[in-house]
Image (cartoon, rainbow, N blue to C red; front, side, top):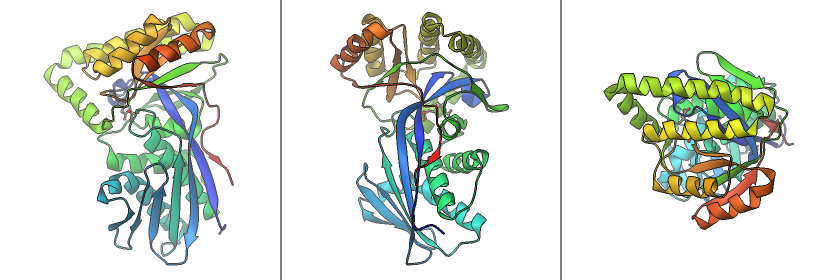
Amino acid sequence: MKPLSRASAPAKIILFGEHFVVYDRPAVVMAIERRAYVTAKPRADNRIIVVKSREMGASGAFTPSGEYQPIEGGLEFEPKFKPIYIITKRILSLSGEETLGLEIEVDSSIPIAAGLGSSAAVAVASASAISSLLEMRLSRDEIFRLAFEAERFVHVNPSGVDPAVSTYGGILLYRRGEGIRRLDVEAEIPIIVGDTGVKRVTGEMVSRVSDLLMRYPTVVESIMDAGENIAKLGVEALKSGDMRTLGELMNMNHALLCALGVSNDMIERLISAARRAGALGAKLTGAGGGGCIIALPEKSNVQGITEAIRNAGGEVFVTAKAFEGVRIEE
Ligand code: PMV
C-alpha cells in the first residue's frame, strides 16, 4: 500500500440533452477545466472512514457500523459524504482490506449543487485515489461504474452522464441504453459559465419533469423527441466547428427546458444578459431550478458577455474543454 494517493477529476457542462437523458435520449456533455482533488491516506485506527471537505468546512467519521459522527460541522453533511463512504467500502471490500481505516480529503474548485457535476467529480476522483492507494489497477470503466453506483444512492434515477464525463473527459455523446461515445472535436469550445448562486437538488428537478411526463405524456414525449434531434444536430455542429449553429441549437434546447418548467427568473436573467451581449447561444446547464447557465461567445465578445452576466447578478468564469478525465496526481 502507498502512504498517500491523490487523484482528480473534472467538472462538466451539458451542451445538449439534460433531463431528456434520464429517458434514454442522447446528451452531449463536455468536461471543463475545473477539477475536484481527492487525497486518500491510511489511518492507524482500523475500520474508521474519515471524510473531510475544505470547501464545505466539514468533516466526519463513519464508524464500523456505518454511523456518521460529525467532527466539524453537523449531521447535515452526512448525505454529501455518503457516496464517498459507499465507494470507500466497496473498494476496501474488492481489495480484501475490509478492516483498514482511511482518511479521505476533498479539495475542489467546482461550485457545489450548481449543475457542474461536483458530486460526480468527487466520486470519480475518490474511486481513483482510493484504488490507487491500495495499488489496485482499476480501469476507467470500473471507476465509472463505482462512481455511478454511489450516485444512484443519493439521486433519484440518475442517468450516469455526470460520472461518465468526469471519468473519460473530453466531449461525450451519452445515452443510457447505449453508453458512452467520445466525440472527436477539434474546435476549441470556449464557454462562459454563469452561476445564479441558487442551490437546488437535482433529484427534485428530475421528479418535477417526471410528474409533467405523467400528466402530459404526448406533449413531453414530443419535447424530448425535439431535444434528441437538437442533440444529433449539435454533434454535427461540434464536429464541423460551426459555432453559429451550435449557439442556435443551444438556444432551442433551452426553450425546451423552459417548456419543462426547470428554468427560473434568475436563470432567464443571466441568459438574456448573455444573449444581449452577443452570445451565439445560451442555455441552462444541468438540472435547472438555479445552478448555472452556459453561454457560447465569439472570441471578440468574451469580456462583454462576462461583464453582462456579472452585472445581471451571476458569478462568472470562462472555461474550455478539458481533454483529460480522471487522473492520478501522486
Ligand atoms: O446534477 P446536474 O444539475 O448536473 O444535473 C444532471 C442532469 C440531469 O439530466 C438533470 C439528471 C441526470 O441524472 O442526468
